[in-house]
Structures are given as C-alpha cells and as structure tokens.
Length: 105
Image (cartoon, rainbow, N blue to C red):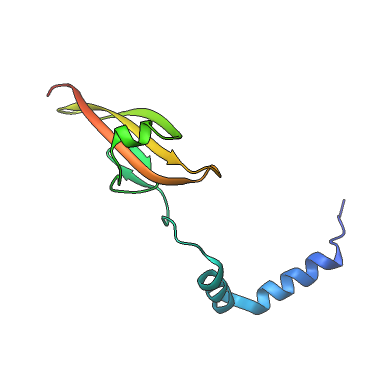
C-alpha cells in the first residue's frame, strides 16, 4: 500500500533543502535564546548546568525537580542528590548537586 504525500509537505522539503546548513545556522543565530547547550554529567547527576551553579538549599527552597543516584563500584561509593530549579514556565534555570560517601569512605 502506498500513501500519497501532500503537496505542502513536498514544498516544505524543497524549501528546507534549498536553505541548507547556512540558512539553518543563520536562523539559530537570530532565534535561539541563551540556555545550556545540553545536559552534562556531574558525578552521577545529569544536570542542565555543570558545574552546579546554586546550592542544594537554594534549589530545594524554590520550585524544583529532585532525584537521587549512586556512583562508584570500586573504592568509595557515593549517593548524590540532584536538583534542577524550575521557572514558572516549567523550564529549568539552575542546577544543584550534593554527594555523600556511603561505603568504603
């Protein structure tokens, strides 16, 4: 079974193909807003801002998303608390992390 592709989709693809990488880079430069490029690891926490840029207390006292993780298999083992502070729109604007050695310290 075949599916017909609407003309509008074909036109859109042609426009995007015509713009190319240069046009895409220009659009990013004009419309992109400042934010972290990507999440990164801090110990076992995958945070938006690395290194963490606020204290754990500050993060926990604001609207936030928090989780825990453990790292280390040989030698010391650490349990970490990770936190992302939320803006009113639900996006994150700061990160915090705190790790404590729990075994073989």
